[in-house]
Length: 139
Image 1 (spheres, one colour):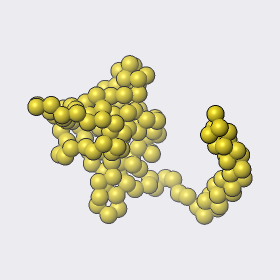
Image 2 (cartoon, helix red, strand yellow; image 1 turned 90 degrees about the vertical axis):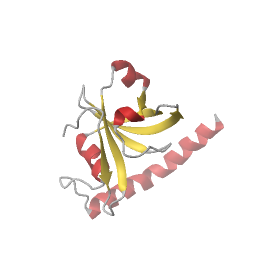
Image 3 (tube, helix red, strand yellow; image 1 turned 135 degrees about the vertical axis):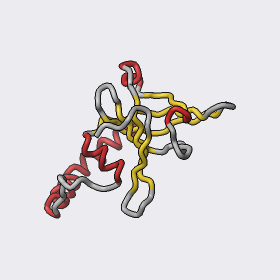
């Protein structure tokens, strides 16, 4: 899936509610390293303004990679609204599409035994995580 550069596509969950926006951009090496991105509202062709803390999916048209993103700051000028996005983790295409559409992909199913195994792993790791958390608070 290759969205046009600097175009937004709304994703909807099963109830028809906007899930996340897909924003196609060109990320320079500096942008990827700094994990921060400044964009103008007028360059994005948004139908609505974004809110602080709103999550988005960023698509890098240079590398073809998807990244999670968050609206970190919003600034207003006489001519435009300016957004600063924090660039999050790289997302596999399947997960990016899940977030955009609000629907899990059909190729990935979770069986009850998968959930039970995950809960067992969390239960086994809980004492260690609690100890690590306590040490971190003491530091």
